[in-house]
Length: 155
Length: 221
Image 1: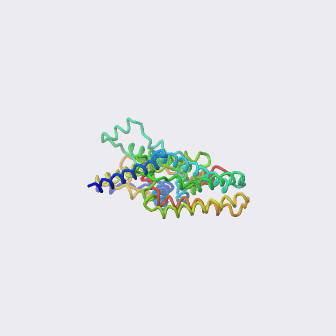
Image 2 (image 1 turned 90 degrees about the horizontal axis):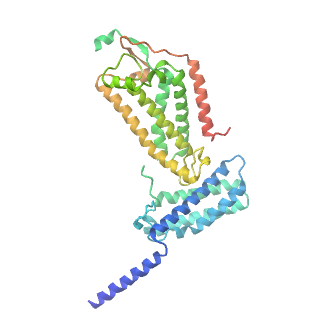
């Protein structure tokens, strides 16, 4: 009896400590912040894509957006704290698989970080020929992760 | 029924351009769905430009085409629609007063659908519509969402269209054949449709293709 009470107390303490760590940002808050970050990332990608397709691309725009994309890619792992999935109660398309398959998700993140760093590098060097393929690698990394870890539109 | 039809004159009810536009749209709607669903966005865009050109053609043809293709022939006021529903169909060929509105609704829904698609973007900014650059990423995503929902309106109208064809078929009127071959028996007392010369269709097709090309290139020459 006594032992099991101790175990129960320990478990309770662990739960409290665990939730305190998560509670730094509540689940719904984390979802909202993530969506804001992702929309900004999408806007950067859209801006780059438009320059790439333009007859005379503005490389200054590409450089500025590439820097933003690179910074966002590095920050991205922190956008997915435990408890910011559908279990948070907030409306999110982030699938629980993100947390149950943390290794696979981390691999997708690394692919993005690598691609974004390389894209930032060629943009900084104003390497016009390398910008297009480097950007498409970034967008492909976005897409590849979304396909596995983001809920598809139902309609 | 068959006895009276024996002596009927066969006339061209639907001219060739109207039939061609109809069947190309009938092919491109499922193709658009399939290509979007299977992530073939370059094909999806081409299909949309094709539908845009066909819509432009059909709308112009609604003013200068054969009589049965003209809006003035089949866009009926409420009185004629009520009379038709009250089972006083009136003699004639072409769209009936109710079917005419079905045509208008389908053209309008497809025009809205194509228009939305031009401004849409995917979540990865890999496949923007040609006019997505004119709106923000958030707005382009919202438009893409409406573009998805709007497809249900297209499906509903197509279902209604097919349902109506099935309904008439059950009452012994088979409408599909005339849309394929163009010719059908002229009911007694009905006037034969007036056709127009082929060069008109060529001019209208050139104009429609130009509009579609211009939209596909983001309204830039």
